[in-house]
Image (cartoon, rainbow, N blue to C red; front, side, top):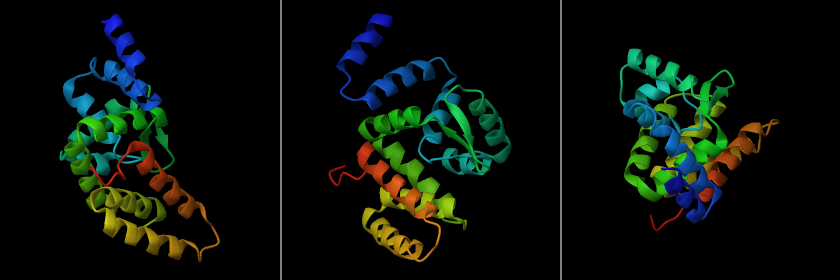
Length: 181
């Protein structure tokens, strides 16, 4: 097994692929439902009980149990007052894997995440909704992105604009902005 992992790491073409190989090795030690929850939780930038309900399609009580399990993993970390996130490298590795090997699942999770975040106000929710809209409906997402950046240009605090730009840049890093997909 170790020789196989080493061979995979040597053949990996990017740091994200290497991170996925290591992450997948860890995920294979977890129960299947928790492993799939980790993968789904990587799609949004942050998650909490309500986000997990939406992207996993589960009840709130089950989502609470899943969140408790996710919090125990070494690559989970608090995301301010909003909830939790996966470590940046782990999340990027998972996203790279999803785009390359499980695109349909990635798009479905993004659609569910958009449905969730678009129902709420607040800069973090708006940014997250636009990010997922860019994934699932690129042209509509680009229009909304431009409108939101214009709105942010009139605000004295540019943190939301910076966050939206950072999220949009991530789409290029993971290959989700590729029109050929």
